[in-house]
Amino acid sequence: MKLNDEKPILNRRKFLKGLGAIAAGLSLAPLRSKAAVETLNFGNGTRQLVTYPQKRPLMLITARPPHLETPFSTFNEGLITPNDAFFVRYHLANIPTSINAETYRLKIGGLVNKALSLSIEELKKLGEPVDVIAVNQCAGNSRGFSLPRVFGAQLGNGSMGNAQWTGIPLKTVLQKAGIKVGAKQVTFRGLDNAVLPGTPNFVKALDIDHALSGEPLIAWAMNGSDIPFLNGYPIKLIVPGYFGTYWIKHLSEIEVIDHDFDGFFMKTAYRLPDNDCLCVVPGNVADKTKPIGSLKIRSFITSLQGGAEVQQGKAILLRGIAFDGGGYISAVEISDDGGQHWQASSLDKTVGKYSFQGWQVNWTPKEKGVVALQVRARNRLGEQQPSVSSWNTSGYARHAVETISVIVV
Image (cartoon, rainbow, N blue to C red; front, top):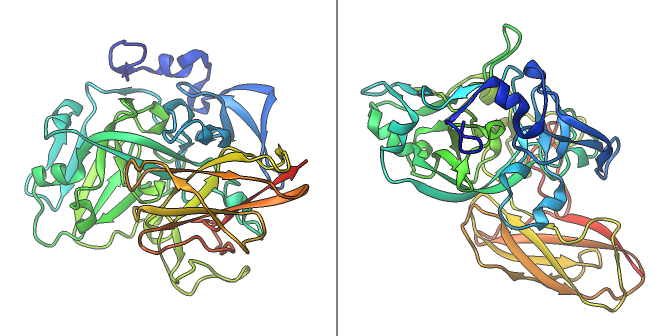
């Protein structure tokens, strides 16, 4: 991997010492500071801020494998999430710590006319590069706010990010290999592996029509630079509008198959209740489930944090972000009276249907005391955030109206 304009290889020693961080083996022990913490607004919500190679201080969820969350204040810096602030999520603990881009190969096989083994340079020469600005959001983003609490990493709202991805359409690669009649799905695998025998490989699948739609990309650049190692260097599958579970890091194998893939991370894990609300009554399990898919509509206030003090009668500019699975955000509104009345915001210039959508509105606090500010979004498809959060056993796809409490003085 290219660091500081050196040869494009990230060797073990450079990775472990990158940007001043010192680690040992697969533990990748981060630099810690006892004074550097973030406190999320739910029980046991204190998180240490730690520094890994190529990353600014991020919230530590787990160290093996690295699971890092972006402090929410980052999203007020701009629509594009900086590479060094982008969240990190692995599934299997045996992750690569050394990748040579010059010898790296992407293998394409299965139900194809010609199996391929492409170098990075060969991949880049298949066609003109394509750019897309798209949100990558963990399926469990905001899980820590579930009530009752659910099993899994107790995440705040920072397991998401928005970046410009540069690569080649997956469609181009599949067409190069040639798809045989009867193809039904395409599977994807990266370089992270299990530590213990018997642990399922992390493999995801897309329907063949989706894979050939021209929207999924095989990307090699993020915000104009090499993809950071912990975000998937040297190539990553980008599935705009879909949850991050499909965005395979260190993409190494693609296989075209003639059936619905029944691997653990499709058939058992990352599934939602198969109903309109994607929910069940707490304590129950769904009669029927389906694989998690496209992002749900969400919006946030980024310019104020909960507990902030504001002056009565003095207008302040509220800013924030909204996004969905590609339906184009058409409206964002705020309420300071429990949802009885809503004030429309102005939308910033749209940079793409899969991107964060910026918005802003002048708000004047009317009465002193604690005020609950709510924000909701709507898209061109008529989808709107629900006022009450639905519940499922995995805490997936949370997208209800967000509320922050501020103090009017």
